[in-house]
Structures are given as C-alpha cells and as structure tokens.
Length: 335
Image 1: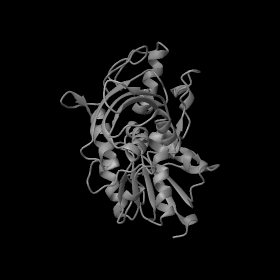
Image 2 (image 1 turned 90 degrees about the vertical axis):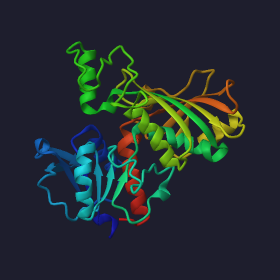
Image 3 (image 1 turned 180 degrees about the horizontal axis):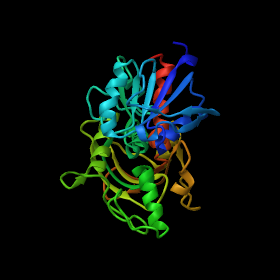
C-alpha cells in the first residue's frame, strides 16, 4: 500500500498520551492518509484537531474497524485485552501502550533504538514498554554492547503524569490546597515522596517495579540479567528520573563510557560536574531524547558505575516510542 494511503487509528485519543500521539504523528509528518480518533462512549463526538483539520472522536464500541492499517492504543490494559485482538482480526497492526501484552512470548516488546529486529512478520500486536523501562534500556543496551552487563540496580523518581490525566489533576488539587484526595496515586504526593507505585506484586515489590525488571530482560534479550528496582512517585508533573547503578562485565574508563553514550541514538549526555550541569525534569520535559549524566565510578563493587537518567515519560516513554515503532513498520514495508 502506498504510504499516503495509510489509515491510522488512535484509541484513547482524548487522553494525555493519546493527544500526544496525535501531535507527534503530525510533527514527524507520519504518512497518514486518514486519521481516526477513537475512545469510549463518553468521549465520542468530541472534536480534536489533527494537522489543522477537525477529527470527531468515534465510539470504539460502534466503530467500523475495517480498513485500518495501524492502530496506536493508549486506553488501559482491560481495554487493550478486549480490543487489540478485534482490531488485529480486522486487519490492523496494533501498537499497544498498556501492560496487557508486554510479557506475552508471542508479542514483540520494542524500543526501536534497541531491538527493531523484533518486528518480524506476522505482526498483529506489538507492545510498547513501560515508560521507565524505555528510558532505562536505551542507555543499558549501549553499555551491554560495549562492556556487558552483570547487574543493574535502579530507583525511579516518577512524575505524576505517569498516573495519567487523573494523576495530574489529583496532584494539582493537592498542590493548590483544593483537596487532599489520594484516590489515584494512593498517597498524597504534594510535598512528599512515595516509594510505592502500582499494586503489590510479589516479594514485597510493586507491579511497576516488576515491569521494569522483566521488560528490560525481554527487550535486551538477557533473560538471566540481574535487575532490581524501587519505584518512587515524586511531586513533579512531567519527566521521570532514574538513579542507576550498573555492574559491567569488563573494566571501562569514564571517557569511554561518555563517548559510548554520546553515540547512542536517542540519547544525550549532560554531564559537567564542575558546572553542575546534569539532567533534570525541568530541562528534559518536552524533549524527545533520553538524557544521562552524573557518571561516576562505584568503588564498592568491581566494574560498577552510577549514572542518572531522565526522560519525558509521555513522549519517549509512551507516545513517541509508539510512533517510532510505526515508522519502522512503514520503512520495512511491514504494513
């Protein structure tokens, strides 16, 4: 099919990530001949703007799914489990942003800078990784290629936008003194740091922490990699930060590591200790790249290093990564 004839659907188009998907499709001039915006019945009929034209949101429950080439999903796990197979059966390739399909052995889990070769036919559903995982693996994959990885310890400092539009509203109400409600995030986040994201999973870990561990192994093809995570919610609206301790398989020098990271696609190094220049959410929010800094050796273990990683969780951590997957599908004529 000619690129200009592609029909693209965005399910969850009225949410924070869905709107960002629409914006990124336009910004990157994705070859979309027709854009269809879909959501639940309560959002149906709402007007959205795409490339300067009005698009009316359709109710997914009553929409005709035929003729869609690629569908970008950002509508939650239960919705994805119900609708992704239906879209695929109707002929679309689905790129799903929820956790529903990520660990399915039949579903590729893809970060285009790391494992684009996982996109092999036949393709029905493709999983977009967790936002914290994405910004982590674009850095880890480069270190793995250069020196090998033995162990990774990561603590995330995740913004409230990771809890969606409802999480942002809840935080803003707390910040503005309008409400102390913590229904969405479980605890008051304003003027607080909450070391708990998601439901209890196993061994005292939360689902968010387990996602980072398991998804990182799958994406990099390292099933035996030792990874452990602590996920923390912080009073920041946009961009996630991560403190990462890596133990490499072979010795490395600081300038070698910096040079490796500078050469990685989608990564920027911001690491000037004397001027105290390093990645921070205020600087990184709205950026496409993942930023890394505060590189320093860890003398407590052989070949160990500490680094600080920051990425915009709504862009690279969700919407941009999904669009980049779609771009690979187009480039490789997989649609």
